[in-house]
Image 1 (cartoon, helix red, strand yellow):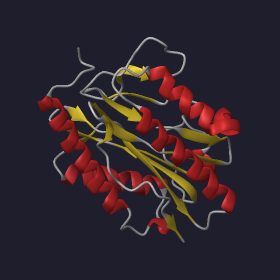
Image 2 (image 1 turned 135 degrees about the vertical axis):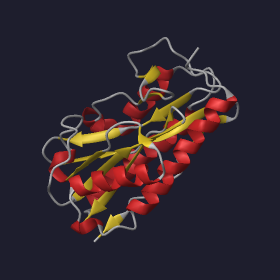
Image 3 (image 1 turned 180 degrees about the vertical axis):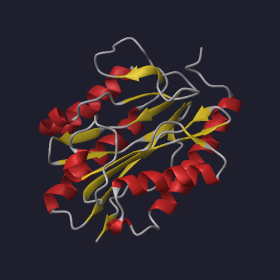
Image 4 (image 1 turned 90 degrees about the vertical axis):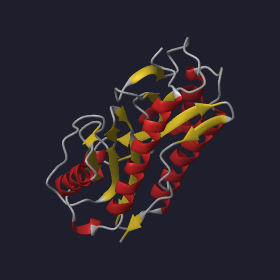
Length: 229
């Protein structure tokens, strides 16, 4: 029952998502090249508190080689941001949660790094396009893994999960979970990621609504690769 949200529940999640987008917009206005992982995490928490809200989970900020060692450890380091920076956070609005990840780059990415990011982004956009009522959750995860090709080995977690009053709810979007199907008014995440141990990591995530007309991202921050030189 909790998988399918009411109109009121969807409205609260949308408001949580709007707050998340606003906070990310403020993140991009900061002097990020001189910020540490810890300071950016603390900035996010301050922004959430200023809005009279609470975080839906402890914000994740990880960069450079550290980002390649996802999913653990989650704790940010007291070191300056460098290379690809994974920024994953959400807020709670009247008990309902948001969840969004954006990856930016500090420095000058190589063509190979930009191509890898754009490949991941294309997989996420493609997954959102094919999500629809009645489609098997497993099929969406399988699509992304096939799309990523030789890089699939670096995609080490599930494609997504339900979101509501808990940050991880059913359904679990994973190719090994063959039974669940998407239902109208489910709220889910779509979050493919690539993690090259001790090298780099990246993840792109949106909170999305399964509607009659398809899958609608509720987090709307730009997903183009932001480069801070």
